[in-house]
Image (cartoon, rainbow over all chains, first blue to last red; front, top):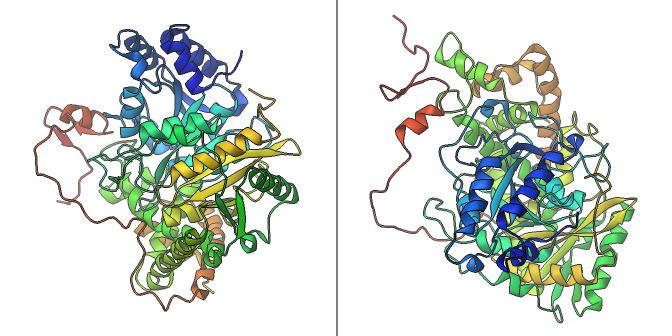
Length: 480
Length: 99
C-alpha cells in the first residue's frame, strides 16, 4: 500500500477522491495487521474512530478542517474518554477516563480520527519502551533493538506507515529520541505551547505533549492544531501561534546554526557523527551559517534532569493510591492497602519514586534538589546566551543508534545517558525537533535542532530545508 | 560518597508507601547507590552566582474571572474507582481508626 502523508490524505478527502470512512477503515486495518513483535499498539479505537469518520461526512464545511480525516495514534498516557488509558502501568490496567485530554479534543475538532493508543514506558519513565506493563516495543529496523522511548509505540506507528501522525509526550526526550531511533520526525514544543490537560503527569515542570510525523510539514500542521492556551492548564501560554506549515516553505539563507562542539567531544558514535556532520554540510550548502558555540553546563544536563524528574515524579505519583482510580490491592489498614497497591508499579517507577523521595527529604534537599534547580538555571542561561549569537542549535539527537533490548535494563544510569542531547531542551523549556539524517549500518540517526522559546517556526523552516536536500529521501524500515 | 544500605532502601520505600520484596530491596540498594553517585556530579558546579531556584516558565501569573463551570459527572468519576459506593457518592477505603 502506498504511504500517504497527513496533508496528502486530507486533500484527497477534501476533494472527495476518498471518503474519511474509507481512510479510517484502512488505518484500523493497518493497526490490526501491525506485526505483533513490534508491540506498538495497546488499544484499537474502532468504534470511536468510525463514529468520528462518519461524523465528518456530514460536517458543514469539511474543507476548513486542517486534519480532515487524518488517522492518528496517541500515546497511552493521554486520556481518552471511554477508551482504557493505562500509561503502560499495571496500576492503571482498568482505568477508563471520564474525559478527553485537551489535545484529543483539539485533534478531533480539526477533523483528525484517533485510531489507536500506543505502547510506552510506564508513566513515560524510560528511554526504550521496555518498562511497559504490555511488554517491550521493538524497533522496526531491527527487532533485536529498542524503538526508543518512552513514546516508542507512537514512533513505530509512524515509521511503519500505519498512521502519518502520532502524539507522544516528552519529559526529557521521549519524542525526539524514539523519532531518531525509528527514522521519523519528532517535535518537542516549548514548555507551555500545548495544553497538558489530560496528559497523565510525570514531572510537571518538564512534561509537554509532542508530535511524530512522517514529514516535517505533517508535524508542523499537527502542532498548529495542538498549540494554544487552555484555561484548564495554567502553564499553557497565551503566545500567538505562528504559521508552522508556511515556515516549511522558507529557505535557510543567513540562518545561523550553532554547534556545541565540546558537548559532542565524547561518547558520540563515529557513524552518528558522520551523519550529523553531513547534515550540517547540507544546511550550509543551502545558505545557513555554522558557528561554534559553548553550552558549558549542558554536560550536567542528564544528572540535573535525573534529580528534578525523580523529585517531581515521587510527588506526582502519590495520587496512585488505589482510591480514586486504577487498581487496588486490599490490605489490613489504609497504609497497608497503599503499599500493596503501589507494589504493582514497575521497577523503574519504584526507583524514581524512591530517589525522588530521597532528594526531597530533610538533609538532602539542599545538596540535590535545590542544587539541581540551580544548575538547571545555569543550563538555561547558557542557551539564552547562545541564542544571542545563533538562531538554532544543532546536535545529534542521540549519541548512538538504537541499542539492543535488555542491554541497559539493569543499569539505569546507562539508560539515562541515552537522553544526553535531549534533556537540556526540557530543562530550559525550549523547543526542539529531530529529523532523520541517514542510516548508520542500517539504523536511523537523527539531527536535532533546538530553538528559542516559541521559536518552533524557525525549527520547522530549517528541518524542512534539510529534509528536501537530504540524500536519503525515504525511511521505510524492513518490518511493518 | 553516599553509601546505601538495605535499611535505607526500606526506609525510603516506607516513606513512599511502596511494598518491596527482599529481592527488590537487594537490587534497588545497588541501583539507587549507582544513580545517586551519578547525580552527585552536580555538586561540583559553581552556583554561587545564583540565589533563587530556576523555573522553566518566565510568564507572569494570570488572573481569570471566577465563574462556575460544569465539572465531571460524579457517577462517572466514581465508576473509575476500584472501590466506590455510587449510591451514596463516596470512595471507600479500609478502616483508618481502630475501635
